[in-house]
Length: 335
Ligand code: P6P
Image (cartoon, rainbow, N blue to C red):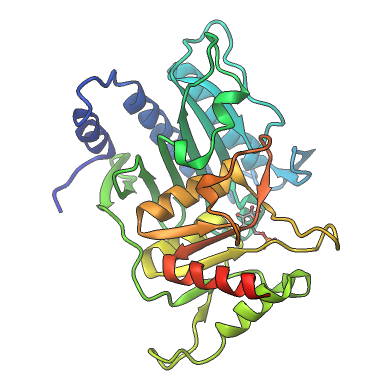
């Protein structure tokens, strides 16, 4: 593979659209810059006493880790200074982040989970940043919530950064999924995984089995079916669960697998609910999965077809090899 930086790759993609103004490319550069800075901080977290909760509680009612706040503030700072966005919605903020008058207003809205899985950082487990980019559709000069509340099929771009044994940025604009590994010696993201396709067959399943008693029967039967010896490979599936969506998904994307966070009755014995956020987790991950030949569902509906009800809309998420995800839908239907 020819050595290519993410900037070169983005420019190559931009050349396919003669009318492109370069705004979208500039936005991707801004995200790549933020990824480098957050990655450096995450890798140092254990040393600079950044770990540990600030004691604040974010919109999700989770104890905010200092790194969450750091990543959120940094991304908002870089994106608003970059002048390419009209609105920012973050898992860490109840409402959209307004673009103040001194900044240029761009043509794109961004939905982001600045540091997904941050409760794991104290144990040095890989975590990630997830982003989803929509084109501005609202009429006014400044963006509004309308620009963020678009369904997954309308995404212009989706991607994530995984801060693991290396820092990787993976993104799609609808023409395949491409992965870039950070070379920290030169500070460049280098193309390392071109046109990623989810390998078949599905060999791994990722689910928090501690929720077993809160699942409905279809889900329970499906998970049990994964433990039977598989006829073709003559062995059961392998169970792998990190508890950090970006890490679990990234491994399954490269090795083949299915990730499940099914609806459960934990909060309401009468009404099964999902935990993950549609705009900040499910929708971008679903876009990437489908571009890599996979599929993503709530169990009854394609994730990318869901009309968001509000910024913090939660959904069940089952994502991975298409045949395996469809098999789950069958189990759920049969009950
Ligand atoms: P549980 C992290 O908090 C997160 O949002 C995802 O990254 C992860 O997949 C999920 O929650 C883990 O949830 O309930 O298994 O700890």
